[in-house]
Amino acid sequence: MTAVPPTRPPAPIRAEALEALLTERGLVNADAIDGLINRFVNDVGPMNGAKVVAKAWTDEDYKARLMADGTAAVGEFGFAGPQGEHIVVVENSASSHNVVVCTLCSCYPWPLLGLPPDWYKDPAYRSRVVREPRTVLAEMGLELDADVDVTVWDSSAENRYFILPERPAGTEELSEDDLAALVTREAMVGVAKVSSPT
Amino acid sequence: MSDTTVAIDELPLDGPAAPPRSNGELLFDAPWEGRAFGLMVALLEQDVFTVSDFQAELIAAIARWEALDQPVEEYRYYECWLSALEHVVVAKTALDDADLAERSAAFQARPAGHDHDHDHDH
Image: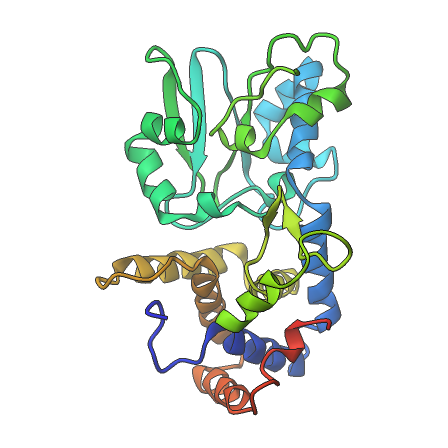
């Protein structure tokens, strides 16, 4: 507990106290909080982003709208809400690779990807991927050729970056739903590529 | 905190009593983290503060943690989250630091066994 002054009660107690005080003042209620937790645990996740990617791969007009105004284009699916504002889409290709970080905290497009994984919030990822992206990506299992350009995008409340991964080879015959099933959270943050179907 | 971690470790990994998972990992390491997350979103939806208000406090809380010079056992993201939430609530509501401290102390003084009833269904 070195992260907080030793005189403060532990976090679970403080969280409970905060909820009790806010409930008494009518600012929150337990059912609403339960509902929000449930929504983010069960209904919001990377499958939303995967649908957007599959649509962009199969519909040039949609892709153009997505690249022009990410927030509006994902809104066509009904994907909106907290941390869903100012979504900026960046496209990966064979020659150009993009990866997303939030160096200061944990900005992340919740409506498209759910809540960020631990590695995204980790101080090591946040500082190192900016300084040595190729090394960090290689450690995460993505080896990039030396002639591939790598760009790191720093998400904030003003711009939440979302990666449109490269469509893998051998997927020409796949339906939009089948394509969406190939797309991973890691590919939409830019720490992986989408693999061809096996 | 360790006791809530143990509690979740003891839950079955699948079936109806399994803890929530996303991509095969726990979304929250302990129930209080989920409460702190839900509280923040609920207050956001009530327009008690804005995303930017909260984000500024979260950045500050993480920076405070990263500025600690002694080795810290482990980075605890939701400790920073809770700290940010306390700051923004004090700034944007009629509650002040003394209210938070007083209630926390009262809850902490409860007999053992009562501490975590609130966070569990069982």
